[in-house]
Image (tube, rainbow, N blue to C red; front, side, top):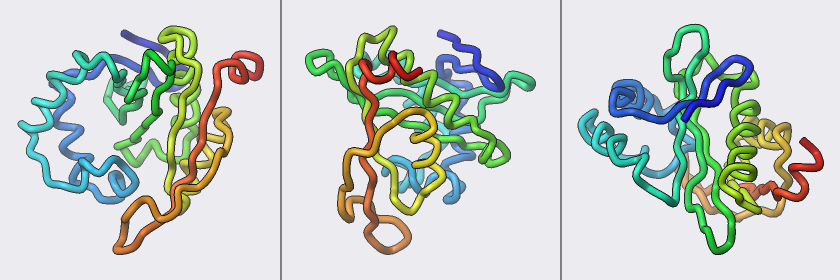
Length: 179
């Protein structure tokens, strides 16, 4: 699969991406708000093994984010926990290459992956959570069209203390009329 955007390309992940993923996993600035799996050291071989099976999971779509100019993978995004019964899933994104932070890429990718979830996967709802102490992520999701739904009080542990997470979602009926 491949989706071209303004400055990045979304493509299927490959085992060859393990080197970049391993680099990102070693940088706590990059992984501090990510899934808890980054909280534990992982070898490059462990990451390659995970990447070799990632496309076989029918309850998840994971796409590499690549710079159009260089072809270099700079992050990944997707939808996990896909429920065909409830027609819903949970959005995630990680921009691993810090030189691409603050350039609007997260908003572009969020819009594209959400659109894919609604129009290709037939989802009705895509939800996410973001740490309240990560206002850059919250702003990117707002700009992409996600709506605040509530707060999960003290639901994430980072930097030695518990933090709130903001719950946000997009619905297909709102999305298709607003985007």
